[in-house]
Image 1: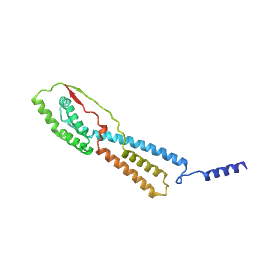
Image 2: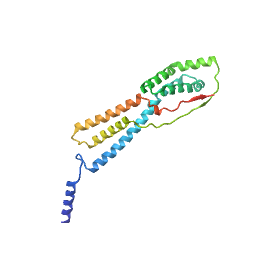
Image 3: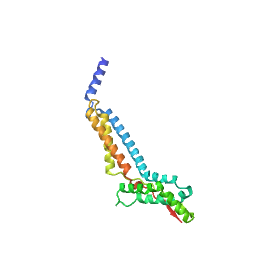
Length: 208
């Protein structure tokens, strides 16, 4: 008698449990946790890609080190780095993709031989003068814009939708998966092309 009563109460509780869009509280909780984890991982990857995109012109510039003697590189590289910082941190009147392209166009000729020619010319005209150099690095944390929040929300929503979509509903799964892929590709392209001004450190300067 007691066993039958327990089974009846369990069945009644299951019948009257609240659901939202066909899913109970446990399913929504797991989906919410998964969406938060994916959104955090997405932001971390975005920050890393942004730093990589900022360093691309400097990686090109560092290739010039292979063609320049060590002493000449130590003497001339701070000037080249300073010029490159100035190009990447021009006023807002110049668009960010243009600044990025100008940085590449500045660093590429140096890497392809202009640095070696410059070092050779300076070595033959006058001896190198010793200078003390001061390097300043400023770390800034930019405030996310409205577009950034929308991209994160769209990516998290798409992840949530893939988890909650019924297995037989292949059409909706493909739709939300395509949305997530579209948001991710758009963010990667934006980060690789645009150099954000608020993430640009201060440039090294020479002091007499």
